[in-house]
Amino acid sequence: MPHHPLVDALRGGLVVSCQALPGEPLYVPAGGVMPLLAKAAELAGAVGIRANSARDVREIKAAVDLPVIGLVKKDYPPGEAYITVTMAEIDDLVAAGADVIAMDATLRPRFDGVSVADFVAGVRRAYPDQLLMADIATLEEGVHAAEIGFDLVGTTLSGYTPQSTDAPAPNVELVRELAARIDVPVVAEGRIRTPEQARTMLDAGAYCVVVGGAITRPLEIATGFVEAMRP
Ligand SMILES: CC(=O)N[C@H](C=O)[C@@H](O)[C@H](O)[C@H](O)COP(=O)(O)O
Image (cartoon, rainbow, N blue to C red):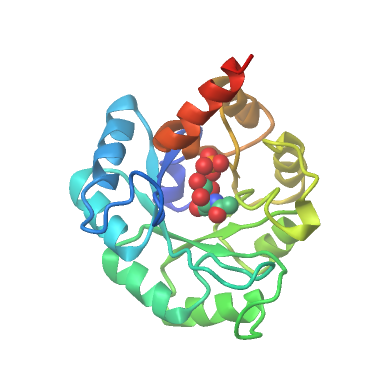
């Protein structure tokens, strides 16, 4: 089946996740920082941007000419789904112009007790043309996400859920297994630290690769150097 042109534009490319949460050095309440990171990604040849919050999606869309994967991350009790879990968040991201909306598609409990399948069905009814990306942590969740109609399936949450705590970082095998099992494009995302690892993900069958912290989180990057240099 041919892909949506927007999904086609991501094929084989790098998507740069430009995110900073409150408490991180690059989090500025007034905004304006994430578009600068997105611009650098665009100049480098990235094919897309991933961003948290309708505000950042809007600002980044105004600054670069790349598709934006939008999400809303909020704090929920540990062990619960937390990436774009309400219809109000979907409404905001659609209004901000998110080309793709990323949603928690783990099989963890959700704050409202609604299953991810029912939530996605509701989103599809409200916005039939909206592209949706599943953020999953395990093979089972990835297969389920493909079955319930997501347009892209990403390994974003591997290593971050109780069911995946022992997963390798990055999880090349999950990408390989998913790519072999589902027809939906597999996005390699999560804990990819080097260009070589990104390349390995493509070789394992990833449709495209999302890299965040290794490019856009200076605290994380500097900490890696400091730790490696410790006597
Ligand atoms: C687990 C979670 O909440 N991940 C978030 C999802 O959007 C982001 O904090 C990550 O930066 C993003 O997935 C990219 O991953 P990495 O920064 O490891 O390249």
